Image 1 (cartoon, rainbow, N blue to C red):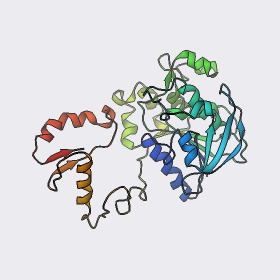
Image 2 (cartoon, rainbow, N blue to C red; image 1 turned 180 degrees about the vertical axis):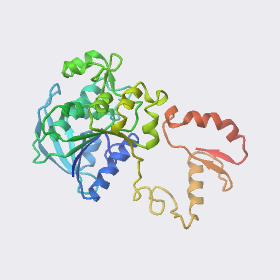
Image 3 (cartoon, one colour; image 1 turned 60 degrees about the horizontal axis):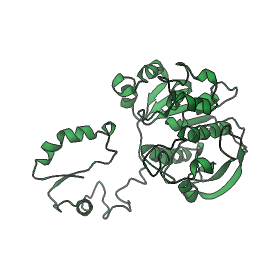
Image 4 (cartoon, one colour; image 1 turned 90 degrees about the vertical axis):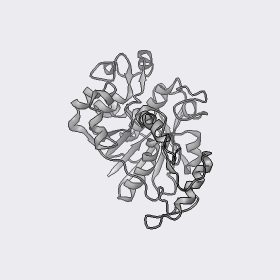
Length: 329
C-alpha cells in the first residue's frame, strides 16, 4: 500500500511529545512490512538540518501562504523512508518549538501554519504536486493535520483517509475571523462542519470527514466518547463510533532497549538486572537524592497536567513520601 503519513513532528527531526515518537517510528515499521510510506511535515529549521540528502522537488501553490511554498525531499534517519518537508520560511523557520514561541505563547499564526501543511499534504494526496506518486491512504495525526480530510472529502478519485487522535484536549481552536482569513469554504462554518461553539476546530475536521478514526488505545477510544474526557466532542465521536478504533501504541524495541541504550550508564537485560543499580545511583545523583541502594525510587516522565496523571500522584504523595525508604523523581 502507498501511504502518506502527515504529522507536525517526528523523531528524530523534532519532538514535543508522544506524537513525535509515533510519527518517527510507525512509518519505519510500516516500511519494514513492505508498504511504500512517506512522511510529510513542516520544514522547521531543526528538521531541515537533520534530514539526509535533502533536495528541492518543486513549488506548491498554496492559498493564503506568505510567499512561495517549496517541497523538499530527503530520508528519515538512516532508513530509506522518504520525508517531504513543507518549506515556507515565513511560517516554519523560527525560534521556539513547533507550536509556541520563546515566550511560551502559541504562535498567533498557528492556524495559517498548519492549514498550509494540510493544503500541501492534500495536493500530494491528489497527485497535484511535482511528485510522480499518489498514495492509496493518507494517515493524518492530531489537530495540526485535521483539515486534510475536509480538503479531500468531496474530491473524486481521492485516497482513503485515516485520522489518529493522540490527544483530544488539544483541538486547534480559532475564532471566526481566522476561519475567514484562511479562505475556507463558507459552508464549513456549521455544526455539521468545522464550527465548534463559535470557533473553528481543526480536530473536528479530522473527526467528521475522515473515513476511519483511530486513537492510541482501546480504552482511550471508549473514554473520549464520554463527557468526562470527550472535551465537548464526545457526542460526535459516539455518533461515529462505527468508524472509531482504539489501537494500542507500540514501542520501538531497537530504541527503547536497556541492553543497548546509550543513555544509561550500565546495560541490563531481563535475564540480568545487575546493571540497574548503577543506573539507579546515577538517577539519584542527577536529582540530588540520597544515594541509597535500598530506597524505593519512583519515576514519572510527563507534562505536569491532570491528563498525564499528575493529580493522582499529588493525591498519594504525602502518604508515599512518609515512607522512610521512598524517593520520587
